[in-house]
Length: 373
Ligand SMILES: [Zn+2]
Image (cartoon, rainbow, N blue to C red; front, side, top):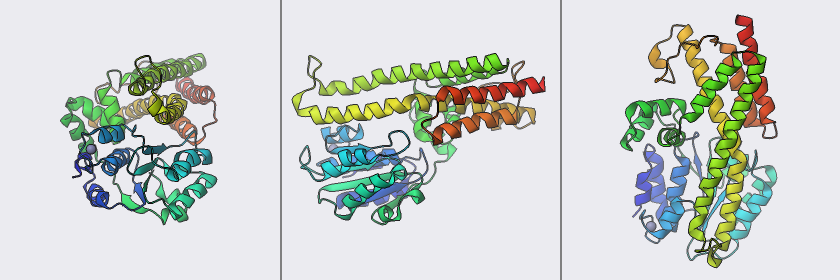
C-alpha cells in the first residue's frame, strides 16, 4: 500500500517510479526538477512510505509525523545561508547514519537544495553514499542537479520531475476550494510554483505583500527621499513577517512539550533538531519575504510596461488590478530591471546588506522617474 504516494499530483511518471521503489528501496535517490514542481512533497510522501509500517497508509502516527517532517527517524538537511555546511552534514547525516535509529525501523535523510553542498560537505556525504548503512535511505533534492559533484550524482538513482503548467496549478488550487480568479492570480504571481501559489492563495494575508510592493513603488516614484522610505517600508514588512513565522514555529514544538511547557524527556533529540531547523528558517525568513515583495513589484512594473506597450490585458500578472500607472508612476523597463537585479543579488550573496540593496534599487527606480518627468 502506497497511498501517500498517490497524493502527489502532476508528476505521474516520477511517482510511479517511487511507488515501485518504496517496497525495495535503494540507498540513494536524487529528485531532480525545477523549484515548486513537487519535489519536496514527493520527498515527504516517499519518506512516509519508507517509515510507515504499512508502507505509507497516510493516516498512522508515522505517516503524520513524516509528512509533517517531525518523524524522529527523518533527518532533514538544508542550506544555512548560501551553502550546506560540513557540520550540518556531519550532525544530520554522518552521525545519525552510523547510530541506532531513534525509533525502530529505517532512517531517512532528506537533503534539500543538494547542489548547495560545499565541497567539504559533499565529501562527508559521499562517504555515507559509498558505504551506506543498511537501514538508511538518502533523498537528495535539487533544481540544479548538474551542479552536484559527479561522484555524488553517480551514486544516486535520478528521478526526474517536470515543470507544472499554469493550468495544472490553477486546477489544483480550485480543487482545494480556492476561487478561480484568486487561484489564477496566485499561479501567475508564483510563476507556476505550486507550493508558493498555494501559500499565496490560502493564507488570509497571503497577498498582503503586494500592497507593500505597490506602496513602495508609489513612494519611490516621488524621488530619492521616497526611495529611501520605500526601502524602509519593505524592510519593516519583512521584519513583521519574521515575527509571525517565529510564533508559528513555536506552535510546531508544542506537541513535544509536557503540560508545563517543558520538553518531554523522550523527545529531547527531536526537539533539538526542530529548533535548529527553525533557527535556519528564521534566518532566511526576512530575505524570503523581501524576495516575495520584490517579485510583486517586478510583476506590477511588468504589467505597466505591458499596458504602455498596448499588450493584451489578459497577459497581465495581476489580473485583478488596473495596470494603468498611478499618477507620477512611470512605466519603465529599466526600473523593472533594477528590481530584478536586486532580487538576483540577494539570491546570490547572503552577506549583502538587505537595506542597502533595496535602497539602491529604489533609488535607481526614482532616478528613472525624475528623468521621465
Ligand atoms: Zn502510515
